[in-house]
Amino acid sequence: MEHSNEESIMDIIRKLNEIDFISPEDIPNIDLYMDQVTTFMDEHLEACKRMDDDKILTKTMINNYTKNNFLPPPVKKKYSKEHMFLLIFLYYFKNVLSITDIQKIFRPLTDMFFDNKSRDVSLEEIYHTIFKMERIQTDNLTKDILRRFKHSQNLFPEVKDPEEADFLSRFAFICLLSFDAYMKKQLVERMIDETLSDIEKEKKEK
View 1 (cartoon, rainbow, N blue to C red):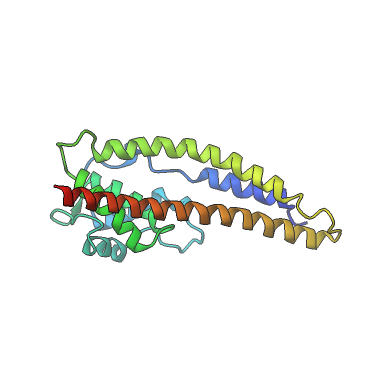
View 2 (cartoon, rainbow, N blue to C red):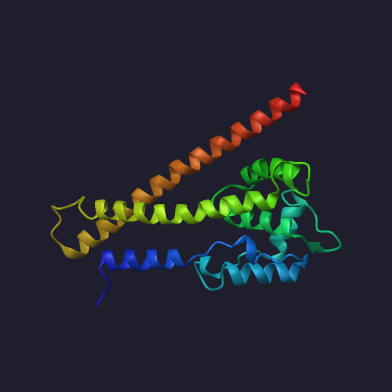
């Protein structure tokens, strides 16, 4: 017997809640070679994969990030803890934003905080703060997803055929989530453009 819409969505939500963000304490305090970096990412972000053969971060990806100035180059072929923080941010951003937008927001981040002891906060403190915020956000998102799901189940009461009703409920739910993702992506893109504009303005004023 096939799962109902409700059983399916609850199963998906359970799997999403299994996705664990990388705790700051899990990141090694020693510098890592490239192979160690990719192995660490694969092990800790495996639950994020859609397909078993999906790649989290490959050597080619990391080399390209360095060539395009997203990521400071390794020192003697080794990546520091700060490199790891940036790579984790990059992993999440690359699933949502264009390469150009990632570059826009990453350059000021690395310029200001990478290996910079004179700032009020370190890159590690930034990562730690955002890590805690993400855990809270996951709980809030789960509640919001369930609310949208329940709403989508009652949009077509006139449809009597169970197969058609099931499809339309799923389609409506996908539309609700997609529109939400679209609006949030628009907001992120505009904030990136504003941030870049403000930084350029400050530079000119100096």
